[in-house]
Length: 582
Image (tube, rainbow, N blue to C red; front, side, top):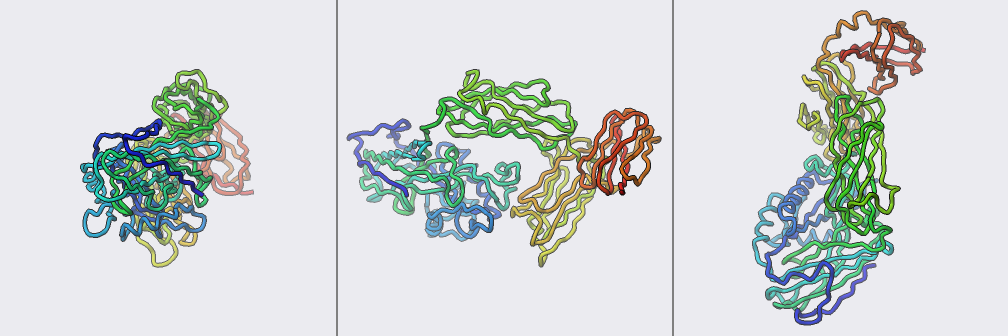
């Protein structure tokens, strides 16, 4: 249950409460923008709205407040889906007069007609109009959170630089949350918010209105009036089952005339008490590609959290692969208490093994050799050399769609994210089922590539709508990669191509494998200095041996089936089929 405590409404020349991020400015200013965006994760065009609103804020970072309100049928969760709605969303949407999603109100102002709701293409122009108008008041706010009790205290000041045009105003304080992971239809329209696992990173999400549905009334609204209010709210562990993480919350405030016209708004600074450390940087996560090509550079990322009361301003990292040469990188910036940030470490080359270990350590924090807790300063991850390899320049991509082909697209990119080939969307079917599409693809440059299959609705190509799949094969039918359609919003596969090996080289003309079929023992003749890799039909590496001798006897403990044996020597490749029957 929220608890609101109202302080006295004071005149500027009266008693004055001093807050760390206050007092509010007493200089006449133009209005700030408050953009309330009505959205939902089943809304195909909503990510485009998210991108447009973020661009507006990026252009005016100190003058634009974004509030994303999940409401309506597009926000209604299905089985196993999160519920991002609040008890306030439907009333906010209703008073806007919206007729579709995404819609947004800019300061709840009527720009034309009789409703405040605007389509996403109108937001930028409306925001520029508001930013050019003078405001008769300014608002500032700050908050502190006790991390032990989860009680938030919000201090608000409003100063009237002119006389209001109405007899009263309403102070509104909204609690927002960033970095809420979840599903999202149409996520590819806002790729910056798509996480590596294919989920969507929701930002500026409305979690609660601390001052109630329509705010806390102010009745003295004349020039020279200073209004100070304080509100307390105990932050729950979750809202509708969605965790409310203290490090990802925002606090914003705005002044409205009744339920409609917003005069101006602002963002507040949040400080934290009860933290276990004064200075502590911890590694939450280290990531890179799950698979890497032998010709690639590693592109590591490290996610840092600040569990101390001091802001993090510089960090020094040391990192290496397989205990090889150590790289050093110093980052500068700002991470506030309980904040997180993902940092790109500089790329570097290394000798790739079939299995590799990336180690990252923090060696300096804010100029100190260590922080107060060194147990979270180190982390390692393992990754493999890709087993998805192709020879030649000609390939066939096969997509088996489910009923909703209009949701399905695919794309192949190089390491610089240049598009090499793409396809879809496809036509929807009249009933649940599948339809197969084949595409001829030519890639004439050796290198490492990425293959993506995307579903705009976020439920893959599968299950009750038809069991879809994807496959990429060489022109001779040799499979490079494949998978089923149960992947959510997207699936990403790495693969390499050796475009030079279109014809088997003379070095393999005496190579022999026998017996074939075999019960498990094979003899390999004329294989001196070759490397052998054996793959199953799904493209997984099941056996590997380096530096073969002239004649080898190899025991394969593999199940019955067809396997592809790849022999490598002097950057040349030969492929032989092996059949195991027991």
